[in-house]
Length: 202
Image 1: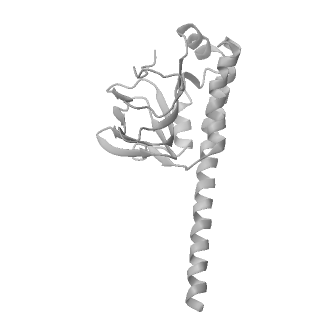
Image 2: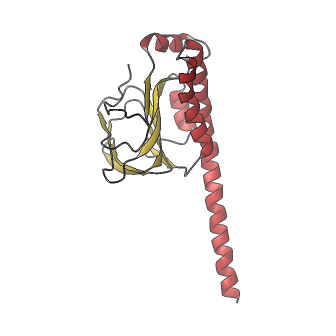
Image 3: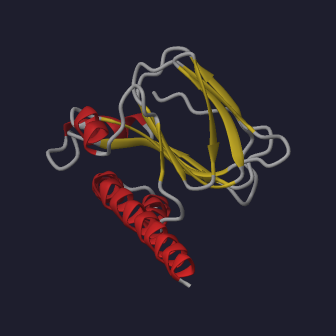
């Protein structure tokens, strides 16, 4: 079973761990066995949130929408801020701590399956790049909230099969969000350059 943090979840936050019988179903069902969630949630201003995993057995994707956290992944220090997307793959030792002064707000999902490593590559992550800055991405928030909507199904098997395919959609959309961020940044640079040239021509 996946190892989630023991952080006490307040009323404005959500943590859902998929029950073991449903995990077995997802690992065998032809529509989900290649990639499926183990746990997911949303933590709002997670004061005191911290975790240390020496032997990480699954994959963990975290999208930070507010605040900040300090991380160490495989011995390398990082700071995670709003707009950052973090992928901690299976086997990666890590620890993270929310900034006491400005704790992060995050959407997160633990997942596994034979396609997990292929999706990691497709999303542009590797051992040297555990974090990608996407900025605010409404599509990504919609996809994360889509996972959370499984609560409306009573967490029945069909709802979780749907959630597994929402997860696949979420991961497949990350490169599109990266492209949109790059294009927006380039457009901003072009605007600045054009402005500077206009001033120089005056």
